[in-house]
Image (tube, rainbow, N blue to C red; front, top):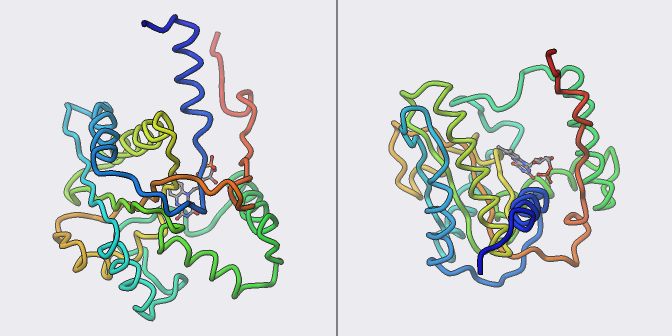
Length: 231
Ligand SMILES: Cc1cc2nc3c(=O)[nH]c(=O)nc-3n(C[C@H](O)[C@H](O)[C@H](O)COP(=O)(O)O)c2cc1C
């Protein structure tokens, strides 16, 4: 049966708005067919002159463990890992971005009962990135380093499409820039050639709804804050 216009709106909007960064997953497996379906749908994302500038490495089970171990046993602490391939964040945060960043950080740590000075617990929480928050599937995204900023825009649309397609299948995700500074540890495990920049990782799986970190609903500015109707 065909869904009506209204139903379609509701379904698409729900897939987009129910996406959130999930930071605790159940061990429930996700089969390769489902992963391939999501990636096939997401690859319908647009890209300038249809260049499709994305690459994805999928890890599960032992391979995922190997990747986690390579990072966590590297002895390279998060604050020392180098953003030497590309910079996701500005060197110096400034308003209004600084406040937004702080708000989501405090909200997350608040839910986890981590106090402002508990740096060890903050680090432990950060390290949960490297086990993909226990998700059964880890994705590592790369892009050809010869490409320009436009292709990074395209890459972002691909990422979002994966996250939305995952929602359509009852799955959740967390995009993870935390992986990028560890490209040296990641490359040998996944056999990633030097021509590719590690853009980010992504956890994919079923949400553990019992965990407080997953109750986080990050804020958004009202549209008046970023929209100008030029009349
Ligand atoms: C490209 C990208 C990288 C991100 N990297 C991380 C990360 O390394 N670890 C993490 O916990 N969240 C990460 N996030 C999630 C953001 O913190 C999150 O999207 C933001 O706070 C808004 O919350 P929401 O995704 O729940 O709507 C990343 C998001 C994006 C888009």
